[in-house]
Length: 182
Image (cartoon, rainbow, N blue to C red):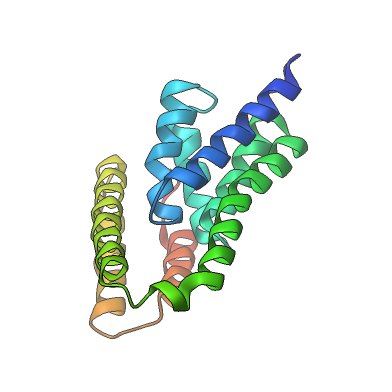
């Protein structure tokens, strides 16, 4: 999507990813619904299919989910500079916050209020991740193959305690070898 106002779009992408990185508690997966709301529903830079495709690819690639999403989204919308500035924007807040936490962690972790705050944030993140999972689940068109793959993956992880990386690799290979064209 090359436009006359490329610089304006790049700055807007920077501000979107910077804002999401600052104000979304819970890390990468918790940022997904916020990004979807802004990029798909509000700004209409992507449609729902494009957003879901970027999310799926970003999730299976190594590295940070949000850096992958920022890079792919920026590139899809405006090219190299969009990818670069989106990636920088999503990185600045967590690097700053992690640095500050590292400096002050030992001084504040003993406070009961801080411990309660961390527990509350954890509960909120679990709720957000559950909501995202349910939303993605509802968007999926299931058939026998997908249901079988879902159940086998679940069993491998929670019954046989197979490392999730291997489960993803098995799922990807199964999709390539046994899946029908979609």
